[in-house]
Each structure stands twice: as C-alpha cells, then as structure tokens.
Image 1 (cartoon, helix red, strand yellow):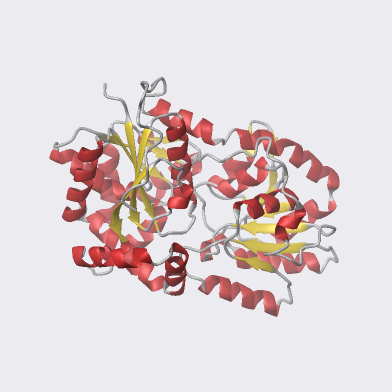
Image 2 (cartoon, rainbow, N blue to C red):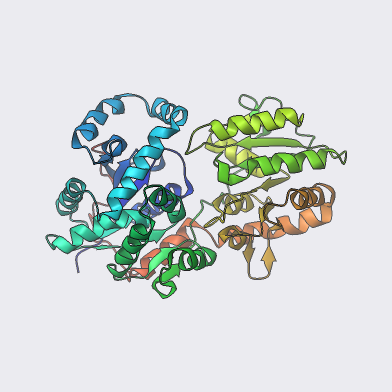
Length: 450
C-alpha cells in the first residue's frame, strides 16, 4: 500500500463557514501527524486557516461559473482579482451577494450534469501530479468531479463524501429546476465511494434520508472538531478595548457569534432580548460574525434593534483572541438558529471555555451540548421568541443553574476535539494505524499555487 496522500477539495466563498473550518482543522491535524496534505481551493481561498507547510493550489475560481456555461476565459481573468487583497474581495462579495448566488447556482447546475469537463480534467491532472490517494471534498455536492475522475481510471485514488451543508446547495438546485437531478448525483457519489459517507450529526443523517431520500445505512456520524483552549489563559478583558470599547465587565454579557445570515435567527434573538429587558434585568448584547450572503440581513436586524430601542454591540469579523474573550467572559452564548442545523460548532467552542449555551430544540445542534448524562446548556422551543426569552432570564437570574451547567461544559466540549475527529476519520478509512516513514514530506513544504 502506498503511503496516504490527502488532498482537500476545499470549497468556500471566502467566509468562515463551519464546513471549511472543520475541513481545514482536519487538514492541519493530519499534517501535524506527518501525513502529506494538499489543499485544492475552489471558488475562493482561505489560506489563513491552513498551517504553514501545507501545499496549496487553486483548482477553480468563482468567476468560471458566472455564466450559465462554465467559462475558462472568466476563470483565467479572475487571476487579476487575486492581486486584490482578500479582505477587499470579501467586501465586494458581501456588497454584491447576487454574484455569489449566481455562481453557486451555475456550479450546482454543472454538478447536476456530472461536472464541468474542463474542471474534471484539471482535477485529474492535480491528483496524478501530486500522487493523491485520498480526496476529501468539503461538500458531497463537489463529489461528481471526483467520481468522474475515478471513472476515467487514469489514476487510482478514493474519495470520501462529507455531508455538512447540502441543503444550502439543494436550494440552488431547486432554483435551477434541477432538484431531483441533484439528489440523484448525491446517490451516485455515495455509491462510488468505498466508505459510508460522513455526516456531522445523527439528526443530519435523518434529515438527509427524509428530505433527499439518501440511504441512511451508507452514512456514519463523525462530529466536527474544535480546538480546545487547554491551558490557554483567559484573555484579559482589555482585549475588547479597541473593537468593543463600551463593554462593561460589571454587567452580564450575552453574545451571539456566527454567520449573520437569515437562517441564523438573529432577529428572533432581538425580540427575545427586548422581552428580557422589560423584566428589568440588565445585560449587554453582543452580536459578531461574518456573512456568506451579503449584509442585507444585518442591516435589517440593525433597523429592528433601533425600533426596539435595543442597544447592541455589533461587530463583523473579529480576531481569534477577541472571540476567545467573548466565549470566556459571556454569561452565556445564544445560538438562535431558525434552521435545522447540521451541527453546532459555536456551541461546542463556547463550552470549551466553560460557558453555557442556549440553543433551539431542533437539528444537529442539540447533539452538541450533551455527552452522556452531562448537559452544558438550555434549549428553547424552536422559533418561539417567548420561550427563548424565558431561558435567557433563567440563566441571567439563577446562579445555581448557571454554575451546574458550567461545571459540565468542558467535559462535553472535550468529546468534540479535533484530535477525536481526526482519529475517527482515519479509522473510518482504515488507516488509523498508519505510521509515516522517515522523511515523509508531510511537513516543511512551501505554499504554492495560491
């Protein structure tokens, strides 16, 4: 057997979506274990998520799919945009969400047709050149490319489908009038892999079976991994001085952290927060995070907050240190999603700092706050503003309840570590006992091709 060479087919809009964070944590963990790892970026790059020494290349840029038929010319033209700093490219995409939506719809349409021939050829060239043995696409919807290369039989490798956001792409398939074709492609790629597909929660597996008629027996649950703080010191409160200067350490902080997009239910949190304020309880509300679909929803939420006369500490992207500070200093984190979430990485990360969470009683996020008999947060009835407010009031007023939940949080979070995820992925592919030979090029390789 050749030594495993892992390549990640990393699909991203440039935002910090949970799926790409999960995959890059897995890539980094494999690299630290001395495996050879490569990243093939699709649509946009996020190289700051990748450890130094992991080789990176751009497989395809988003402009290739700006037209209904994949355009190699636009793909090449997009190289010019790479000269522009990533922050400015992200800002452009946030201000022009229609560009992202158009590209995603056309990409999904291409996958429904079995893949773009030019892109299939390019992927095959990459896999042959880099001697890849294991291909790990961020989303199962990218797997038609892998299956097409595999069926050409010019290079021997295997791919592992991972389901962690397919419902989003199903929406684009529906807009393109190709929903059943999309489901059929997912069934094809599941059958074409030697391993059951990875799903990020048991609930998400049930949802894929119910909504997409995918075979539950061909799925296995492997939870996403989080970076545990370990012995890392709690950041000083002064970490907020520049970006959130009005925060008062003497008043409880309630935080939402995550994407500021419509399905995340931030407006639900605002109405609940107003109900809590009417009881006379004092707290500070912080809302932070990027967006995958533009800033229209955040603008609407700011208008709602204004009409509710609700002061908010708003922030978009924040540093890792500030995020750690919010996890550590918040009385609790609220994750008010109206979406049936595949998983709840923010909930698990919150608990790793000893802080409880409030989540809806709906979706895979419910699996993120429990380990055996230990529970690290409260649940509210999904979409129920009044019940969300009542749970917030409980955690603001009841110190004994808060302490009992906090006592469980770190133990629960430890079950979702990156190392645990990596062990499970390797065992799932039957290579958990692999020991790289001396001189394996899994470390010390320079970044190329970005």
